[in-house]
Figure 1: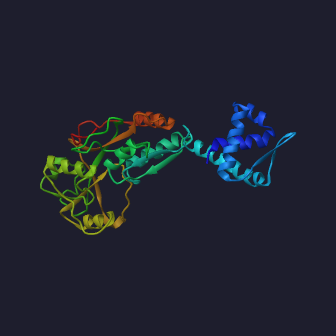
Figure 2: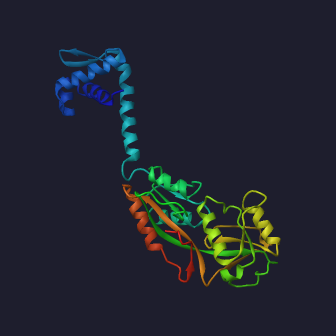
Figure 3: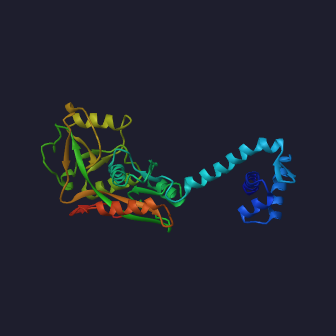
Length: 307
């Protein structure tokens, strides 16, 4: 249905005269008549009748008028939903318990006037495609994954260096260390069931294992984090990795120990992705917020492919 014709019909109804409607719409009276006639033809009914005093609604016109106003109202709401500054900023993060989600919460606390919509896409490739296609406004990911390139219209900049820590049970050979070096991991087995090929975190931990000589075990029975933590807590040989600001909780009886890694400190490289042509006003504020909070970690190691 032609919404301009609907708008013209409502204008004639409100003003009571074709001429006055033409003045309000900044068109000719002839254009008003043609639009109304076309609308009546498409509906198969007569909506207005001309009188000596102007225009009057027919019975069909009276029935159609509230729906015509509803159509125009829906049009206004649809436009407002995507008008700059009205739509929520849609941002993808790797997982809601990890550091990028914390960065989003901090931004919302600092700038509550901006509404946020959080997504969790499967991997960096999906996030890059969603940014490129305008399905999301931004993503915080480790990119570009080895063997891939960012599209020309997608930008990326590092916004967070998050230290990786070792997590071991009380009986593990490294449990008594206050800190460890990545070289201390040589010959040990580290369980990371989610670090699968095709994911950016899988590529990161595979490179870390190759660099420092430990065994990365990605084959694991059970689903989710809890079975892994249960096994690590009771194992003298199995460890796992957690990032420094990951929000993880386990039973006190597990006795799990977080051991910082230093000399160098492995850091997970969180980068902000956004489309070069994005007009969303909250995006610039979000970028500024992340830039102000970014503190590079000295004496660190990260994957060579990371932005």
